[in-house]
Image (spheres, rainbow, N blue to C red):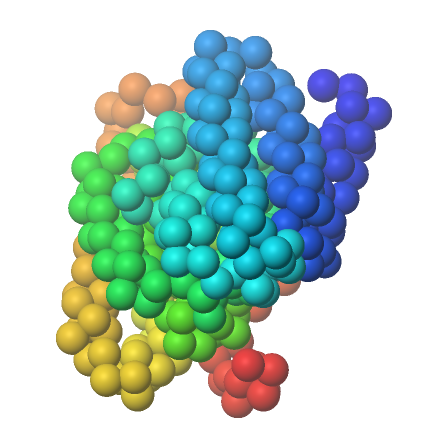
Length: 346
């Protein structure tokens, strides 16, 4: 892909995202989502591999269906209430259809099946965009319409997402698929709290995007996409492997790291809302995803390849760690001490 084409597609992505997050009319929000979808498709299919073409086709079909549902719910609401404003969604059927459309856009269970397949067929940099930037516009719409949506339905979908994201990621060997199931599991945490404390959902999304970006950029630097090749990276890049270990533990939500902050706040808020059983269930289900984060961390740092390895021997790379990854790793692991400062923005 030529640099000019890349520039056009990246600019279109930024434009589509900006249009959606800054609009308060359903038609402009829908137009921004469509620009986003059309801009990411060439980035998914740029390798021309059959798997990439398949991923792009699946992504297009799912996103087109979700956009049609979103437009249908907006038109139904406008038909009954005369309102095209995003925050004025009041018709119950329109709210139900919108919940399905946004769940499909985000990859929230039970509409999550497309996401691991699409991520597996995409390059690592495009997979990073799909996991973070492409989820920002639908997450904004979820934030804006959260008072109108059914909290019980969102709670059930959230618990199902966390359960399926944990269970289905257990036996995976492809790192992109593991990170896709990790994303589905994290979406459960965001969806469960959106009706009660929408700003916590956005905080969780920002921190998740930060930590996921660190993981994807590290994997892209060490050119790894499978567990079997991840086992050989310690000899090649020990510093990056150590950073990957810390970032994965933060993504799992373990206490000394940044990833613990949103989970702690969500559990606290759910308990205040007399939803201790839901908080307990989602916390226990997140232990499933902790297993595959630890498995990734183990493969990246503790497992040294045996002498009779079938993989090509890796030479030790002496060039320094990219500064962007170093900064991202620092923020992904060390923001917990300044949590009072972060809480002033929530």
